[in-house]
Image (cartoon, rainbow, N blue to C red; front, side):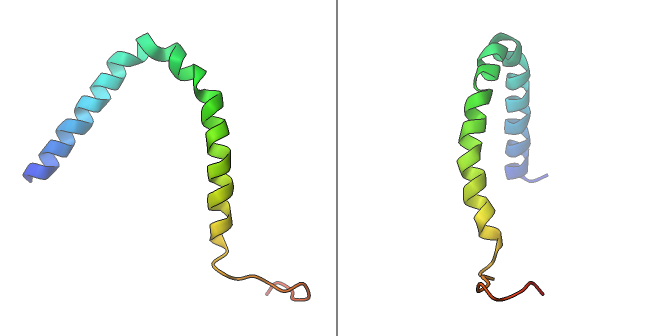
Length: 65
């Protein structure tokens, strides 16, 4: 295992353990942020939704293939 991969594995493991230990104490704070997460996600979804057309704009008289 390379040294960089070992550090990444250790960092991810430490983050998961810290999250597991901190979750019971801060559960109400996290659930209080859920409505704001939805409000933040809406503009992001609208922004990224429009990028899937790849420049295939149709004129008003054209039909779908």
